[in-house]
Image 1 (cartoon, rainbow, N blue to C red):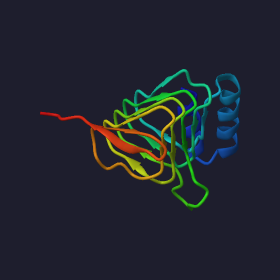
Image 2: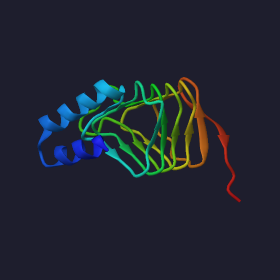
Image 3: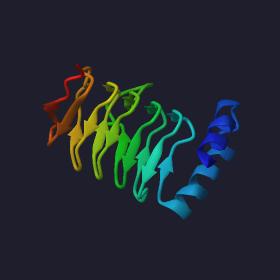
Image 4: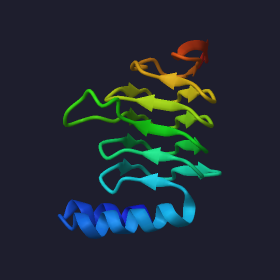
Length: 140
């Protein structure tokens, strides 16, 4: 709810007020969502402490993000610096998704995984450092 207000203010160039709201919310919840991030419908944040979602990140509909997850940048990119997450994606506890990469729909990212490359394949599970596909779901 607070992110939606901050995002609306950010879009109409009230950036200071938007960042102020996001920092107050971070203080009380431990969840840091930049007001510029685009968040889809029905995002579920479970045990939110330590979650970071960067300014140019985009999160699709019906996603779940667990504690200590980061949708961040690598420091090497300009303009679009953060990931784009498709619909119905699950981001496990402590997972890091870094850079301007795309994660397809219906992907599960395991706990503590580090995702540095795009995942264009739907219905898969990514785990490890760096992440790799370990499971594919057949939709027949």
